[in-house]
Length: 329
Ligand SMILES: [Zn+2]
Ligand SMILES: [Zn+2]
Ligand SMILES: [Zn+2]
Image (cartoon, rainbow, N blue to C red; front, top):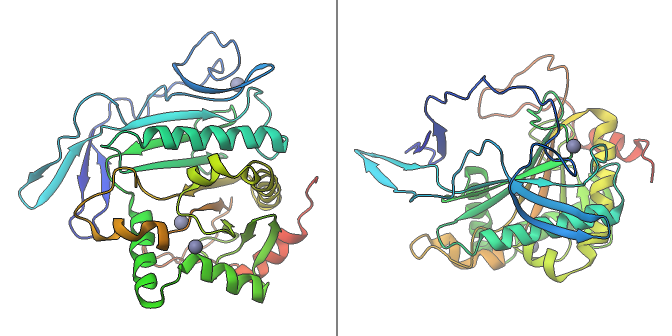
């Protein structure tokens, strides 16, 4: 497998003929449970009285490999490089049946702390441009493991969606000297029609132009480009964000079982690019957040013409339902 760049959209694509594709065997024994006979290679753990509360291990079939050089090179007008990077599984909880929406705020807080530490650590590698944290849950979202897990990838490039956000954030800042995410939050809190819930310094809301029905963002009120910086310096993240994340996932799951969750944080500003302009102002114009994209079971009609999203439930209606969803505290 290798990475190829589309010269028009500038997005990187992992492609090749993967012999493992389709051959993955079903999980017989959970390799992420405590004392699993199918051990995975431990990277880091948050200690607790019971051994560990959250930990990170090497992905059993990683998309990216630490060894080797990315070897970015031209191919005529094209760009390619090998899939060098890191791919980790974050085990959110030692218990097999405690998904984030069933866990205690303390447990979710430990998981968030682990995530912040791992992102910080991976960014010490000067080759790493970006670290993605994501969770795919449910049969329609490509869930990989039964155990409560999220995944981390460290890549030598910034993923396309984040790149769009960085460019848009910078343009907005150049015109107004304000952060677009701070401005969105101010307006949403004033209008209140798309705010699902606020908890301490964190707000869950439905975006003005959702890509899918019930799309939800969680944004911190305090401006910070970097999740890991907030995570390691502000303890509120581990209580208020933990509670809001748990409650928001309960609301989403009242609508549908499957969802994608992704954290958007700043690229590796410990080792900024010297040539790309948008790296210079990231701390001012970018603002970390979490995006949750629910996957509805029945895709009755799709009007998605590839790049135009069709979302047949308005954010205002979705937010009303999510606010009223029955959650258990
Ligand atoms: Zn398990
Ligand atoms: Zn901001
Ligand atoms: Zn985003």
